[in-house]
Length: 52
Image (cartoon, rainbow, N blue to C red; front, top):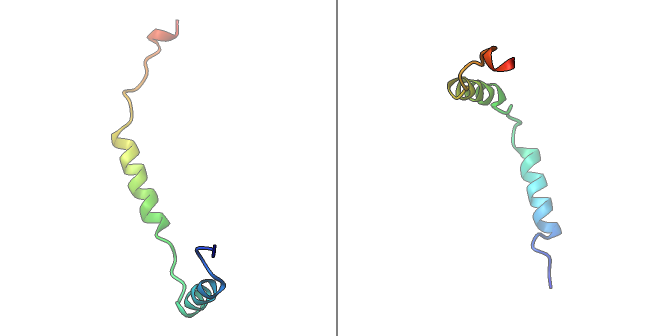
């Protein structure tokens, strides 16, 4: 049985990766979206009444 990915596939992907210009990942935008989502889903603030 042959493996799913061959050495030829790997060489083609490597060549493709080397020819493409590098792009920065949009991590900043992703983090801003995550923060905004977390702010809207925060539970109500806790009170000190239950701590006694």
